[in-house]
Amino acid sequence: MIIKSAVFTVSNTKISKLPAPDMPEYAFIGRSNVGKSSLINMITGVKGLAKTSQKPGKTQLINHFLINESWYIVDLPGYGYAKSSKSNRLEWAKFIRHYLDKRENLQCVFVLIDSRLEPQKIDIEFCCSLGERGIPFILVFTKADKQNRSKSAQAMEQFKKALLAYFEEVPQMILTSAENGTGKDEVLTLVDDINQR
Ligand code: GTP
Ligand code: MG
Image 1 (cartoon, rainbow, N blue to C red):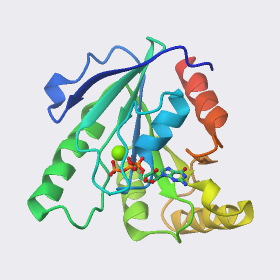
Image 2 (spheres, rainbow, N blue to C red; image 1 turned 90 degrees about the horizontal axis):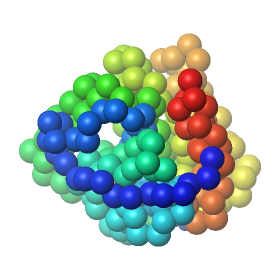
Image 3 (cartoon, protein in one colour; image 1 turned 45 degrees about the vertical axis):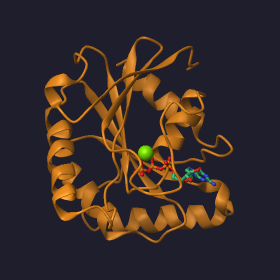
Image 4 (cartoon, rainbow, N blue to C red; image 1 turned 135 degrees about the vertical axis):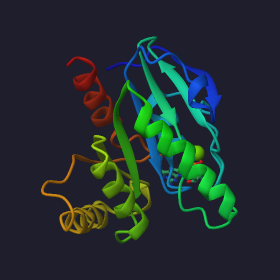
């Protein structure tokens, strides 16, 4: 797929104010600072479309971007940011959970995992919560440029093993880098396939 247009539409915490659910939608989620917003910019080819930061906790709202006037990318706040206050974290859990459960045009959630880390409990738990709620997801490993391929392959294999303790099959996995474009075609091909179903 070629991206011809990528336009910011709206930011929200209110489910009632989201765009009409009349086009397929793909949400990006993962721990704070894992690289969700950067990956969205890489995939769309529009620098600065989604706001990024070196500091975790940058994205605070549900952000919709309309792609090729026919589908949405959604940038979500990260989870697991230790510095946000407890009430903040609960608030996060509430509106994101609500979004994930209620959004009828949500086709698939991209769960981002830092390719440099061993399997993190919080990521496994989040995958399990999606599984329990029957929300389709795929795993996107980020920051591949920061290490060699065999290290990333090893991290992906370890994550797969960890998930197999809870799932019969593991979802598709894609290795990406917002820095050098690794994985862009794979992500867009997947979206294309689902959009055409
Ligand atoms: P929150 O919105 O705070 O949850 O974070 P996020 O997941 O959206 O992360 P963001 O895209 O803001 O990136 C966090 C930091 O990681 C920034 O300093 C990015 O430049 C850096 N980063 C993200 N992706 C990559 C990547 O693929 N390679 C490298 N080298 N750095 C990356
Ligand atoms: Mg972000």
